[in-house]
Image (tube, rainbow, N blue to C red; front, side, top):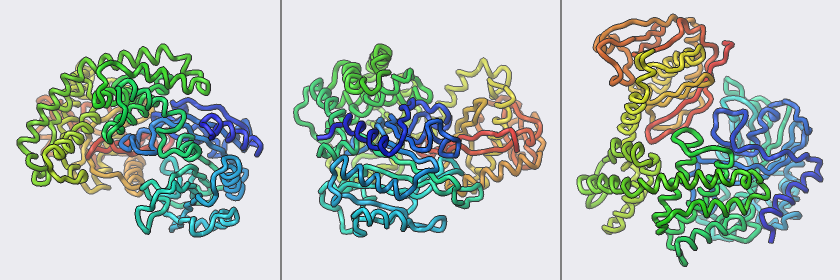
Length: 622
């Protein structure tokens, strides 16, 4: 049996023999990309080299990279998803391409790892208006002995990577799957299916295109290969296990949790809780090793959310005493040889976990009582005898904020607990209710954010002496970005054709703006491109920015957008940007849009149900 350590060694040695240079494992905190909180893939630290900058070690690189992703957090507990994982990767920076990459992938899987080639399946890009069907990769795979019946053509959503932003390197990819031996879920079952028959183990990306600002795909002069092979997923196959929680580096944590909780045989609910605790304590330990402390902001908030979710699921399986530090010690022991930083930061890791567990345990019971009281009211008044007849009813946003502010419940935890309680109650009452029908029952997020904003405003009273309802940081950079949020807000209304879109939250640093707004779906690439275009058109026009003082009622009559009305007194400041935008705001702003430079959207993402977030920046040159 090949364990995880041997797998990593075999991989590095194999590609060293193919003239690849081993590059060090990068930090979990991206050093060159402020748009993401954590390193999510092996290619993350290599973006500038993939874009053409020469790498000091040459054109062929290989490494093992620790990664962390939180976008699949709701999937944690299934057979394959993990928050923290290790990624094997090899790269060609304008050197070899499809032929060598595929041949070496096949050679490593079948000869080095000894996998049965008759259980290998492959998916390739099916082609569309932007790029042709990837027949070249198919022919290479067929030469390797993979018959056409085991090669599947899938669309861009399955077999295309990138670009990382709106423009840049991208291209088709091939994905390699191993047949687990499970029965297919249907006659149409194929590698893109999530039924469990096909287990994805490797992905080769062929960066042969550059996506331009006008949406065209041009062939790149430097064609790159970017591969990724999950250590834990591959270990499942090599060790003949059914899920990632049974492999050598993870099973000891599972067994330790069962021992502490005195659980011999797990039911379905207990097993999910054990898996969530196992995953989250691994991720938390590695985040803490980066010197990140639990907090209510950015990376610290992710860490706090993971740890507190552990504690709640510990309660579900009967953990009455503190247990996380003991699990963290085990995580450190398992990984300290490969990651000495864990041992070096051991005291910090254990101290922070102990403090966080003590802090949350002291409020958990009382918080759950508040939750139960509100849920009982919701159930009796609106849901009993069954959600199907109820219409749309929501858990109080004010109570959810109370749980967040006074009892330390991350809002995601409250929402998750709510769904679990509804399902539990339906089962208790014998109500045959499909889980998908329960999605309309949620926390009143609009009310939650209103309470959140009130709290922020109270905390910011001192700073607002300078600008009523304005910014504490009045540097040139933040002033420009603040003005840009007005342009962004109006551009969103016009592109999405919704006049009720408005700011629901904002955070501005000298480097970027973060703008939260009410909308119920992900924006398309075309919509984001159009928003950018409209904002930049207003900047190029050199529109004057005019401030007027008037009553709130007069401002409304003139059509000014009032974002947070509770902030304003008898008189308000109204800022007009030409005839394009008119908003009530405390400032500060530039005098003319030509001062802003070029506007660029960095990222668009979900914040909560019915809430989206855009991060954007301004380049000095327009």
